[in-house]
Image 1 (cartoon, helix red, strand yellow):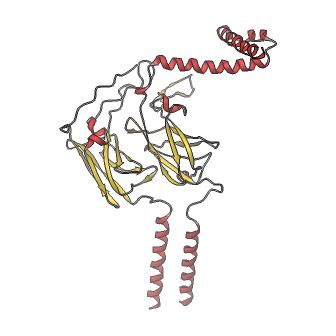
Image 2: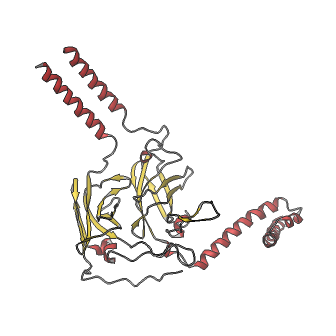
Image 3: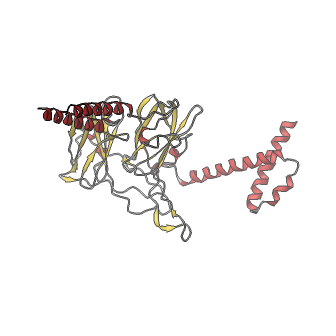
Length: 219
Length: 158
């Protein structure tokens, strides 16, 4: 009987020792902050979507999926894949972006047998870009909770402005192309080969301006 | 006698085991809040409850279930720090169409809960949350507060 008592005691000790050992698992590097929060669109909790935290200084982007109850927790890469809510990110200053889409309409597909058409965007467009989101946060070491109360797509600027923005992205594209063209400025005839004639025209006109600027800098 | 002692140790072991199981890393907030949201005596079947702290701190949110019940989360964790809060409630009917005519997002559905419950300034729902579990039933009325002035309607764009 005494032996049993001892066994019990050692058993207890072992349990206590291991329980103190387990606890929260720590990531090896200097990630020191847990960031969680909730996302509301026009006051109502979002049910899906994603949050991204872009560091102001150099560093990895922290991401978090919005759960069905509107909450999110941030992680870098896989984070703490054993328990995602305990993932840690680096403390510092961040700008957040949020994108929430309505659930996809599964009755419609892009092609037959293809993926369903994505649901329409529910959050205002400005929250999808870090330049315009205006969601700045200072992540402190330890636990951080950042509720993100964003406006719905009702508050988007009128459609014309959206069109302008797509033009802008075209410009940046062609600007990249003209950048390429600049490097091979000696053979301007090559651009004629690109498939879409309208596109080629656009590229050409951009190229001319690109060349002009090159010439300007040479003079 | 000896059997009684072993029994005692047995109990102790069970107690330690349960405490080990319960401790973990959760339970970061000292209070929990749950309750039912009603409008004119009828449960509100969808929407969002938000507890905005009177001082500094994060807001806590709860989704209203189909039976009107809700419980609060702060971030991903259940619960809320104890203190003073101003409560807001927003509930919209689901949008009638899946998309607007131009393929854009659907216009928001009709408001279920009156508009003054949207803002902490006008909701008039002030609560003090004690540490431990709190049951707070939110009883809303469609009778506007005396100083309520409806905002001009926002123009909807297509």
